[in-house]
Length: 612
Image 1 (cartoon, rainbow, N blue to C red):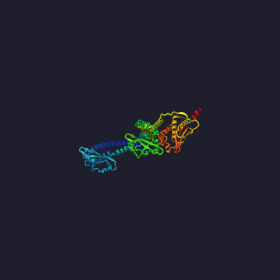
Image 2: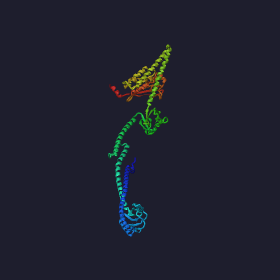
Image 3: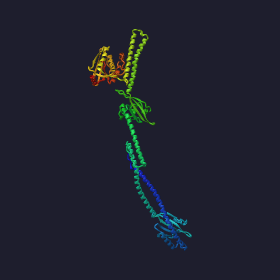
Image 4: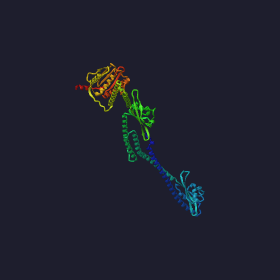
C-alpha cells in the first residue's frame, strides 16, 4: 500500500474544511455586518440631513412669509436673502441647494455658477414634483455620472399660510459615508486574512493531533498484516481517538493470542499430516492440489512442485474415469493399481468433502497402501481354496472306497484289504494336513513362544541324519560335511527337528535311485549355515521363490502321489524366521536342489560352554 499524497490526506482535507468553515463564517458575519453598518450610516446621514433641511426650511419659510406679506416673493432682494441663507447651509457634504416655487422656477441656488438658472423653470424632477403636488418630503439615492459617487437627493415642501409655495431641493454627497464603509471593509478583509492565517496554522496543528494517531494506526495495521503483533499504538489522550487506539491495542492482543493458537493448531496439524503413515492431499474448490504430504508424494512418485496446483483427477490418473464434480457428488473410495513390472503396488483412496455451511471448498483425499492387505487377502483366498481342495481329494477317495465296501466289496478278500489300505493312507494324509495347518496356525499366532535351549548343533544334526539313514527306503547315500567342533546354538529343538525333517524328506522323495544327499554346516561370524543338497530333478527358476509359499507344489501330481501336503517348506520358513534366521533354495534343473537356512550363532557363548 503506497503512501497517501498530501493533497489526498485527511490532514489536508481536515485543514481545508476547517479553513473553509472559517471563511464561510467570516463572510456571513462580514456581509451582515457591512450591510447593517451601511444601513446605519445611511440612516444617520439621512437623519442629519433631514434635521438640517428642517432648520433650513424654517429659515426659508420665515423669509418667504416676510416677502409674501410685502408681496415681493420674486424680488431681487428676496433672491439675495435666500441665496445668503443657502450659502450658510451649504457644507462639504451638501453639493447643491435650490429653492423652487410652485411654478417650478428656481428662486435661489447655492452654486454661483448656477445663478444664470435663477428665475427659470427647473427640469422635471420626480422628488420636486412629489413635494409640490403632494406636499410630502421625498428623497432618493442616485449616482453622479461625473464623479461616480452616490448622492442623496431630497425635496422638502415649503408650506406658508397660503399653502405650499415651493420646495427646497438638496443634493448631498454620500462619499464620506461610503469612504468610511470602504475603510471598514478593508479592515474587515485584513482581519479575515489574518484570521485565516491563524486558523490555518491552528487547523494544521489540530489536524495533526487527529491524523498522527491515525497514521500510527495505519502503520500498525501494516505491521499486523506482516504478522508483527508485538507493536503497540501510542495513546495520545483519552478522547474518542485515544479510545480507538486503546481498542486497537486490545484487538492486537486478541489477534496475537488467536494467531498463536491458530499457529499452534497448524503446527500440530502439519506434524500429524507429516508423520502420518498414509498419504494426505487437499484441493481447492476447483479441484487443484493445495496440500500434499511427503508420504503421498512417495506413493504417487511425484515431486511437490509437480503436484501443487495440478488437478486431483490428473494426479491420480483417473481423469478418464471420473470428473472432479462427480467426486464431489459421490465421494466414494477408489482402488488404484500403480504396480510396476517388478513390484505390485495397490492404493486405496478415500475422499471427503471440505464444506463450510452450504459452500463446498474442495476435497480431502487419504491414500492407503493396501498392497500387503491385498496380498494377504489373495493368499487367504488361495489358502482356503487349497485347503478345500486338499481335503476334498482324500475325502472323495475315502467316500468312494467306503461306498464300494458298503456295497459288498468288503466280502472280496483281494479287493477289501486294498480298499482299506487306501482309506487308511488318505486318513493319515488328512491327519498330516491338519497337523501341518495347526502348526502354521500356532506359528502365526502372536502369543506363540519358542521353547529354546542351548544345544550342540553338530551332535543334534548328526542324530537326525542317523535317524533318516536307518529308515531310508530308497537307494540313496548320505554325505556329511559337518565340523568336528561343538557349535552351541539357542534353538527350539522340536521346531528345528521339524524343519530338518521336512527338508530331508523332500530331498529323499525327489532323489533318484543311487542319488547322493549332502549335509553341510558352515560356521560364520554371527551365524551358522545349514544346507541339504540332493541330486534330484531340480526346480524351475520361476518357481524357486514360490516353494516356501503354502500349498505350492512344483509337480503337483508327483507330490500328491508321494503324500506331500505342500506345507512342509512353508512351516520350515516360519520356524526359521521365528529363530531370526533366513531360508532359501538354489537349484538347477536336472542337477538337483540345495535348501539352506541360517541360525544365529555366537562364538563367545561357545567359549563359555567350553569353560563350564
